Figure (cartoon, rainbow, N blue to C red):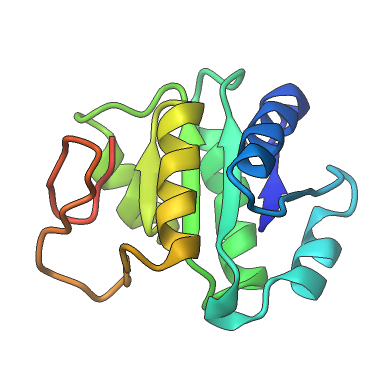
Length: 144
């Protein structure tokens, strides 16, 4: 699982460690080379791409980075964990960046990635039906 810190390397390292505890091999991408590394690691829909930023209070920078990630790995499901995501802006943010899921905490992000990797949920961008996540939320492709 390619994991990008989007300006928050500490959060990326923590999330990578938690994913490792779940048995998921996560590679934290270097900030200076993340697009190059992403193109090497993201193989269409076989790899979930994660962007995490708990330090960035504004979504603008994360949104710009996610746009670059979508262009580098257009077919890989993208999970975005950002502290400033809440129910009022998660749907708009998810739609804007083309994310499969948006979470507001590392714990929810790890659970979502685990479920995607293990195949227990399939969040396709063209799904119109609500997806039961098992995380206590069932909304239209949003995990909060």
